[in-house]
Length: 224
Image (cartoon, rainbow, N blue to C red; front, side, top):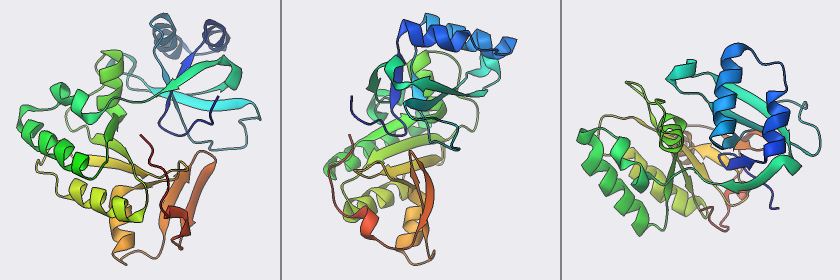
């Protein structure tokens, strides 16, 4: 099985869910996880924040809907418990969840990204609601996008398309994701490329690092 990356969705086996539900969760967390297990909903691959994730184990999590107070639950599962990996929905596929006033701007953004050979995927509250069918979105929720890019030139073009998004709400947030899984917030990318920041924070599955050089963002295969 290929090495996973942040923002990928992991679907667990029955044995994997059984092992998770055997753990000593509080009542609220157990109810949420039981729902996820019963409906075979995916978890998201997350960054390893400590050395607690041993070899052969994967850090995953979920952002619960309003029913469970929008809790963020962090878990560890063995790689063997993962049946396969998937992706959050494309922006074009979640337009129905967006405010009517933003529909035209989203359509224009999807079209403009297409001319750059880029596809936006939606994580965060909009992405989770599209997947679970439950109430994750609230008033003021950002529209969190991750977009696979081939290198710095494409990242520049994509970031400026995001910056010119034609709707005030929802606010666009999210990351540009390079071929090796390295990701950077698109707003920070713009500041760094413009010389207004001396370094940029790059997130990988294994951790976070400040990058001053440009070698890490050389052209490669785009993440779709």
